[in-house]
Length: 426
Ligand SMILES: Cc1cc2nc3c(=O)[nH]c(=O)nc-3n(C[C@H](O)[C@H](O)[C@H](O)COP(=O)(O)OP(=O)(O)OC[C@H]3O[C@@H](n4cnc5c(N)ncnc54)[C@H](O)[C@@H]3O)c2cc1C
Image 1 (tube, rainbow, N blue to C red):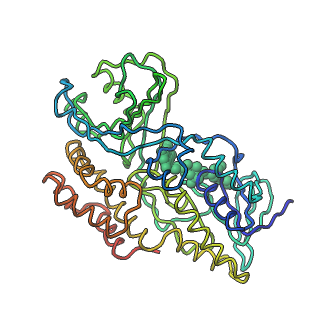
Image 2 (tube, protein in one colour):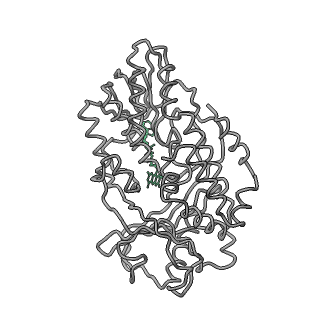
Image 3 (cartoon, helix red, strand yellow):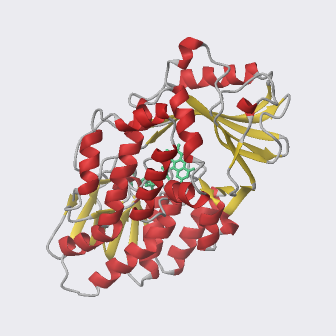
């Protein structure tokens, strides 16, 4: 039986695990990472981010692609390309895709420079003591540390959430390939194409989907038919059919299929973790994914150093117990203002899940008519609570009546979420 001891033991080597492990090690803490996979294994997904987010972090070099021409379509769509129904909403902001290998290496390099120790194994049991906690793996190895951080993703191995709730899941079907004609303009990135003139009246009654698309260069394009978070989620078969119908309608054919993404599932409105637990979570496990956009990497890069600093301060008291360290850690991961904002975002996604196709198009049209600072700050979770509330009020005031009615009627758990905004749970 092996044993090891450390200040912090991080479980998982995805973006969440690596972000917090590198930040803690930068604070001079002795960190170990225990992961099911090898920490160098390639990640399954490619992560998107707004250009300004990486610029503010000085990490532009980690991008593989960057687009200046960023647009969405919220009109109904028409066979006449000049019709107003086909006119794009310009976002006037750069969008990028990380080079996922470079992002991973960025964090691993920081960890290696600070002598983080890497272990492979499947964590199975946890035992929180008064001064040292233990994790036991399936293979029978024991790891000891003053603080355990469960960063094992959306279905965390140890972390519990405050309530069991049905989770809205965003589903996507994507292809990378070459086409008989460009499916989006050359050099263009399309965040959301909600045009729906290819759908029948019956299909328009079903949950709406949109196209997320981009020119990847060299004649290749990435197209992904996507649903917003839904419960139950839309099936991949429907998304595949919708993409085909969308392309057929515009006379677009795939001539060289380079990659197909079958079955992407992204949980959106995760319940809050139980912040009284005597160990921490970070990343998907700690519900840090943005409930409206599904993005997290920008948030991890911004928040990991703040959380690590607070943890290091508490740990400098050698008598601090795992429970005391965790209490401070949770307060840094989920300060009250963030919890209140989370309730607003979750309220918003509950609303959007019920919106019908024209309502949704009107909603997004209004949303991207907010100031650039407002919609960007909403999507990146960088607005203050005050600013977020102001953005919501501005949005409501300028919204057409079909959206106003949708926003006003309270259904399902919406009232509960509004109350949580006033009194956030711990
Ligand atoms: C399809 C999809 C697309 C996304 N796109 C974006 C995007 O464009 N931009 C963005 O910012 N975010 C995006 N996200 C959200 C988020 O950034 C990712 O989900 C991210 O991978 C979550 O990181 P994580 O480290 O929390 O979890 P994971 O990446 O799931 O990593 C979990 C780690 O825990 C390990 N583990 C699991 N169980 C155990 C165990 N018992 N013992 C030890 N180790 C264990 C695993 O081996 C793995 O290393 C996307 C998510 C999905 C699903």
